[in-house]
Amino acid sequence: MRIGLLTEGGYPYVSGEAGLWCDRLVRGLGQHEFDVYALTRSERQEARGWVPLPPQVSRVRTASLWDAEDDGVVYGRRARRRFAEHYGELAATLSTTVPGQVRGASGTVSQANSEAAPDQSALEADRFANALYGLAELARDEGGLPRALRSETAVRALERACRAPGAHRLAREARVPDLLTVAARLERALRPLSLDWYEDDGLGAVDLCHAASGGTAALPGLLARHFCEVPLLVTEYGVRLRAHYLTDPDSSPSIRALLAAFHGRLAAETYRRAALITPGNAHARRWQERCGADRAKLRTVHPGMDATPFAEAGESPECADPRTLVWVGRVEPAKDLVSLLHAFAEIRKEEPGARLRIVGGPADPEGAAYLAHCKGLAAQLFPDEADGPHAVGSNPVSFEETGGPELPSRADAYASGALVVLSSVVEGFPAGLVEAMFCGRATVSTDVGAVVEAIGGTGLVVPPRNPRALAEACVALLRDPERRARLGAAARARALELFTVEQNVAAFHGIYLDILSRTPARRVVLDETGEPVPFSAPAEGHVPGRWTESTARAAVRGGPGWATDAPVRATVRDPASEKTPAGMAGGPNPDASDMGPPAAVPLTAIDEPSAMASVPVTEGVR
Image (cartoon, rainbow, N blue to C red; front, side, top):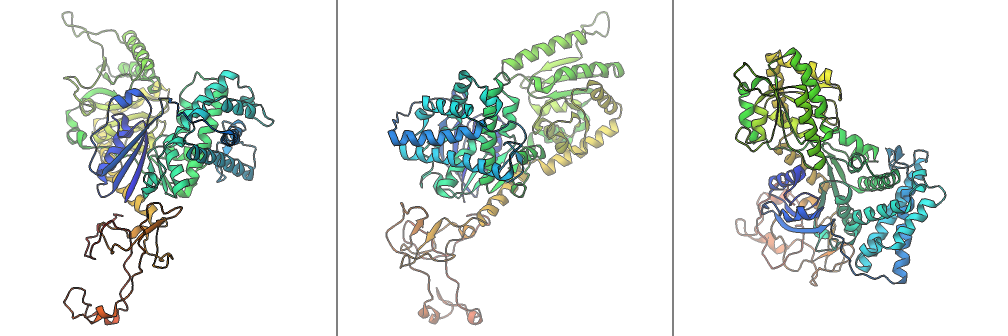
């Protein structure tokens, strides 16, 4: 089958764990064909280039979310009136939304007004959807929306919605600078509406759209479903609404409330239209349910990670230093290294020979400042120590990065210690913990995000921001090597069972087939009179090769723009063929007298004549 893979800020560009997951998925599903539609977030990302693409990627189309180009489209009076109407409706749904307890169209708790009745919530959800698709149809008719979304008309429509009766308090308090900021953010988020990806030779030609994340990345999938009836699969390892709450803390409450309302409404519409939703863990699943996702559509698929680099460390756990604790990750305030350092001070009181290796670097200036603060705190808590009067003192806490001679890789970092520690206060899916599990290491973690789901009963879990509890758990494992070994072996077995690339690829292969088997065929085969042939092209019945003569043609619902002019002849029985002697080409089976008439062969469109031949069937290929 042909998959349209929708990404934002990831694959095929060289950036992030999400891009690695997409690359593993595409390479693991070599029996399918992929068209990649990528949205980019920055000029730096585009400058870093693409990863090497496998042969099953037939096409890559990209669009920018960071470069605000003027499309040059000037609307007439009627188009301006259509834009003001649809954008005003969109703004009205945002200004009446409370950023907190809400109910989605399905009736579950989501991002709408908590006091609204379920039918009113469904009405608001439909109102948002009609406004969104109305803007998309306007963009398709007029050639684009960027200039209109940045116009004064958009800002005034947003202002009227925030000042209207019934608007939420935070919306009414929005000042002009706040409205300008919200309008600019909405323009960036709605840029996919203006793309030319939704024609028969674009997303209309794929069998399934697979959005690698929610939010803006899923918008092209929504429009492909709206314009071309292409089913949509949404995979989320991090929910966009949650990410909005965790980022941009310096914005005013009005800006955060209006943008949270937009992300909540968009998430609810995406979940409502998706054929299936695959959260990466139970933590993301709970967020999706709160945003309106139907529980019947949810299937948890854990992320697939490559266990090969960690095999050597996992098979030789005895090489670790029994007194060393290791922390590996990206240095930022959410990792709460301050609590880890205070916990290690308690650990040193019980185990004076213990050492702590903090392996990782910052990703931004905020992380660099936090790293400097942690180094200063470590120097205060742990003065340099020397074994004797003639020895050089050293600090029991070291700050290192991978890539050097001592720690060439992350696997070497995990292998250097007997115990891996995670001290985060905010976490999604703990990929670092899973890597430690691949290495067969016992872990002590804080109870945040999907940590408990990932480690199961193979590690110790303590409350976040509790240095004493963290220290007690670490001391208990440092003093019990047999327990450490048992937990490490169990952790490795669990990781190899649940979190490998192979299980992830197999899960999505089955999901693709499941969605396509329940999706009506969008190409309708016509007979010589122009009537559809029933059951002529079931979604699950397509295999590579040509099965019919060149007289077949196919029509696409919504307009046969690419269909051939030759009529399609229905498959019928040929009485003469039944008289052909057995054993000759086309001869009947001598045992087929009681089997009834031969089954009709499905008709599909082809490019050139070809005799009907035996075609090898590959399981699961469409």
